[in-house]
Image 1 (tube, rainbow, N blue to C red):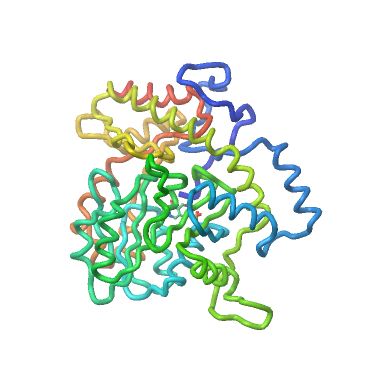
Image 2: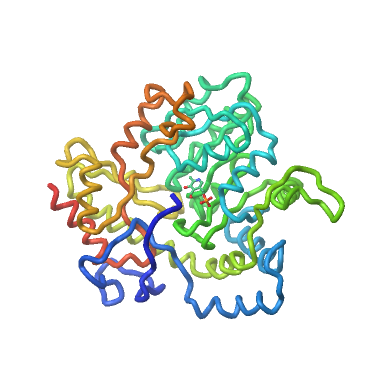
Length: 399
Ligand SMILES: Cc1ncc(COP(=O)(O)O)c(C=O)c1O
């Protein structure tokens, strides 16, 4: 979901939004475009002194001081032990597979952004698609075992929309068949149980994205959550060409390093993320309140027992709604509202995957149906209440 158009308007600030309309949250113009997301940025003035430090130090990359500081601060914020920062999540996924020495076949979900499966192809691994669960829209653990072959080495599930997979059941299967589990956790920044246990602590590795469209962004960026220092060291070498020291290269690594610019921004973003998450939760709550009265539009169940990150607001356009999902998508566009059909088409429908036996729509009925019926509505910190009401009013007017 990288290419989402839209700029942050100059009037937007980081004030907490409220459930009632105020001057701070009133739309600029009734017809101004509303995008599915808008990047969250700290006040510019707060970034300037950090840029000055980079200019003065002349250390731009290769694990400089901001990289070190951000890595530690992020691990503390997320409640995990070891993190390796990356230039983006796609390189992190490719490297995670290398770090675990994965080959052969990997079981994964078709209901995701293409980077999930692309990371497998970049490693010469064959993706094996397994259908999703109709409630969570994550890979269905009950269907994983039937897809395991002698070539299977790992499972790559996705915490779709930041809603956790059935991590326990997946781990049980992995333990039984001696498989690794690498989570594509691109959507799952900050998601925890109410007891404060991060969802990122499950599996062998988890990969986060800090792309501009994500809940937490460093313009571009990503990270691998590692269980121990030894694994982190291997990943740190792999993201730096496999270099150990001036004269030693131990693996055909890649250049996946995060720069000081992105790391400094990440450090600053951490100071504002809780406010942003609170604002997102208010947008989520407001949609839920209104959609209760609009027949045919179903919200996914509210995330109980979770500290959710409200990264997306998917709705299911049911048969009793007067328009199909695609008709509603077009109707919103006519009104300048750019909702997105995440995830349509399914990854398995793209040319480089559709020849695989597991990509057949008959093997993926739940994912195929979800791809036809789900629409992600605008949600971001600082979405003006009036803009959100425009979205709701257009949907209501279709009835
Ligand atoms: C599920 C998922 N995986 C991977 C990626 C790739 O992340 P990045 O853009 O940081 O490479 C994204 C989003 O862009 C995503 O949504």
